Image (cartoon, rainbow, N blue to C red):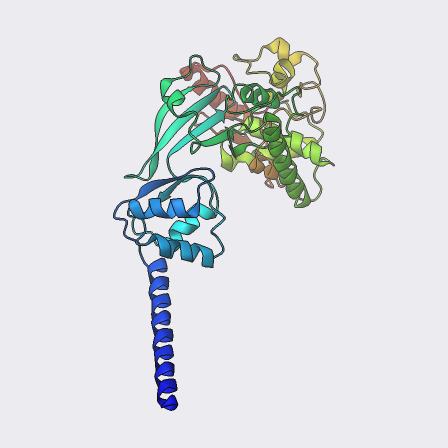
Length: 392
């Protein structure tokens, strides 16, 4: 009899094990299989939200089939405590595993509203956009000047939304004074900025911040990023450059940045200035003269006068030899790389060609022909600035 009882118990135990294995397999399949969502949705995870609350919301909105399986999967993956607040796009058919990854991994909102505080060379503005789930693209809601009063009602309606993504975007070629002046107008930042960082020391690009971030912390991030970019570029520099320090390379990069907005031209523009330095020629570049007048505090807003081209200042490369004493703007990474790895050319001159780019020349004769061609375009367009470098 005892043998029969033991046999039945063993059989029952095996059946239970098989059932548990089948249950685990089913749960695993549910966790990794395509989910029930028919259309993409935006899921908002509030700051401090619990996994239980989020899983119930997901089940109620039809994003997952079973909140319990979702919680068990999160616990098993050791991600139950890693929820990141924000607004996340969940695509149609997203599995529980994909949903869990979306709300625990990056912490960067991928849905909802986006506020981009843009600092440009001529102005700073704010663009509020909202994700259109149907097209998977952000549609602009409102755009306004930084520091505008009164603030647009569209912005005031969402300004306190904790899921609002806040970004600061700095264009290449903006000066340090312009960055500081603009950041003072960002109402989502805190803290004073007492000094203007050294010219060239701030990296252009995008920075995602939280409401209440200290302005000094934003500047520190920009400074650290630029220092890293410059150090890496200097380490990989070409041999026999006509400058000896990373700071001199940064000065050259800022000139390159201000001379061309065409990415493909940076290496050629760099080669012109490098060739001139090697031959003992003056750089003769207008942006340095302009910086000597404005000191980076805004734009000149007019063409240079002949008297200004002749006036001796530390930044007038028509009258000084070599590089100016400091950068004249904050160059981007590509301009820095061009400064330390210029194209190999025999060019000594360049001038605007009417297309937004430049015509390059190795001889003064060729350059004069390019200038004559530009003068005809200039007269037709009513332009007043030549751009490029002068002949001697």
